Image 1 (cartoon, each protein chain N blue to C red):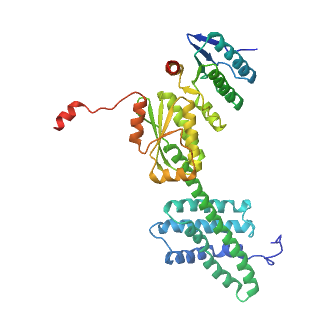
Image 2 (tube, chains in turn brown, orange; image 1 turned 45 degrees about the vertical axis):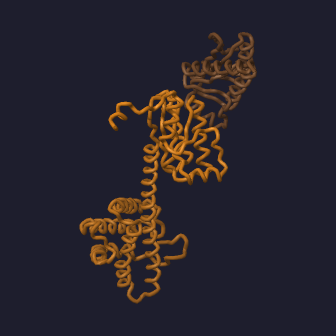
Image 3 (cartoon, rainbow over the protein chains, first blue to last red; image 1 turned 90 degrees about the vertical axis):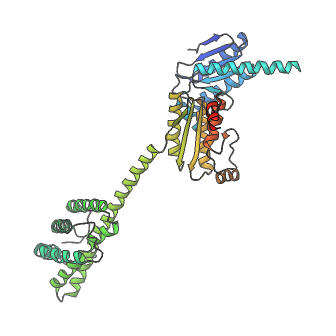
Length: 130
Length: 299
């Protein structure tokens, strides 16, 4: 079965979805990603879906789940490169992914992720001080 | 002629024969009546054109009555007469006639025609009554047909204008690098929201904007449906990585939104487009400053 590759970039994990997201592929990604976050002590996950033309409610929900799981494992998720048609479809399906940060492209996504993670570390340090 | 329903015409109608013999005479009387009529709009249509229309209609009417049924105008014999009427209708609509006036043009031939029938039948009251009944029904159908064509014409015009409006009414403007504005005007229905959304998202991709300002100054009323459409657009833009600010909220609209219980908590809202632009610049890390030179010049 085809799997979506997960690349490591320092503290971040980069996932570029280049194939059709079948349900099983999506579930495998969810599985792999959570494992990799723990293994690599990743602080952030960047999911690039610029090659994704079609989404359904299952894929939308899976993306939301992946973000929530990453959150629990103390990693921020940023979703980048969504196509206009995909955005419209998701909104029409009632999936607005309120808990995921989004950015237009990978470049902006990385800078957003850096800011988020730094912010997070600073917040945590502040908490330790108390 | 055998009548399939067996209700109206028991004897053969003399209308076709009458038209054949007296067509020119009827046309002359009809023209005189039309030219003398109070409701004639001399400014809209010239005498020559009116005469041509009347002559053509009468000859087509004549031809159709020779071959076609007098009860049913849906047959092929009436096709060319109906085409002519549709033509007249179109040209008259362009000249500024109302559908009623166009229909009365057809109905006005009744007078001269009935006079002829009366002369033809003389003292045969029963025959005359039957003939008048059938001819009246026929003319009514033709007049109604023109009214229908006029309505259809209008509907096509309205439809075309609506489409043009849709295309024209959803511009996306670039206010500043990274800041888009979307001045919404008119009513926001689902069809327009769809186009607005598509335009906006496309523009976000093109300009790499991070903030989009939806300005609803020109939106007449905001009800729950419009608010829902706005929120959908906001959600879609957010999925593309752009934040939205809703601006141009008039006091009345603010009251309506609160009374309707619409939740706008997650969206930044500003009273004016200027405020929204200021917020957008701030979020992008810009600050606006008056040049020192200008303040020195003011002294």
